[in-house]
Image (cartoon, rainbow, N blue to C red; front, side):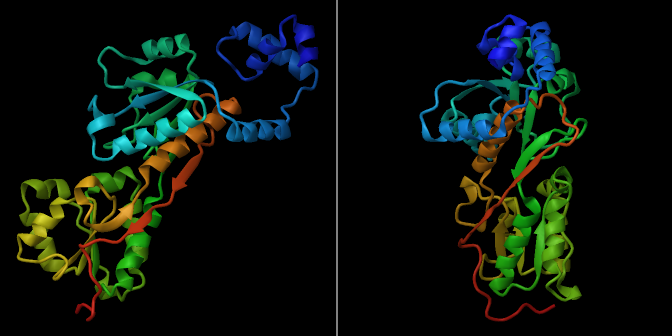
Length: 346
């Protein structure tokens, strides 16, 4: 770096910042330094980069820079009062703090905020990396922020986005359903069924229903029950669910919704004596249920790790080949299931 600094007439620190695409260095200066570095045959040393990463792990980390945590949920307070989003946020903050990063929050539905204004704020604060949290109903980011995705390193939590597709971290929905079905079959259940709203299943690209389909292949065809997709409609008209229940007669239901318990009990079924319930995302309101812990806080941690990697490698903007990190879920026993002594009759 000394040679590059001498050739360009700047300090070694300026060279270091420029080669990391730091916004503190004017674009014209960065370009001049990059051109000089290429002419001199400069190549980033991966061994040194790895050594610096290890040093950061074993020594207290001081302040590095600030990252942006973008709330994409329509609720301004979703980071604190949503059933699942706070876990992502806690994981993000925990990992960021351990690596010396601070996080500034922004709400994407703020009527006074658009792409140009957010870009100006981020530029003023020296923020080059953003994490998007809270996409629960759709996979398309607000179009007015296109300029933000193009000029920053970006990672999404929870889902894969489209238009644009950004790098993302989420639980492995497909594997968690297969794991849950395997646990149910091991207990002797033989008529497993999925209750999931169609909108949520589409949000995760049908990975919930795909996992159920694969899990059901261990059963004969007559025991592979069709899913119930009309959850939102059934909230207003439970008769839709009751008709499906009468038709399919499952012995265990896999779902995301605590309302399902009320619906089955309204038909005189007792849990777990008459029917089992398995929660696909453990929440505070369903702690007594058996089910899957999605470890959303770990997804938040993984998002920060990915973002730091993108920044270290100067991967700014919409990626041509988006990265994906899938986080494994864990089985949690509970009081809503019991071992079956007699196989269910078709």
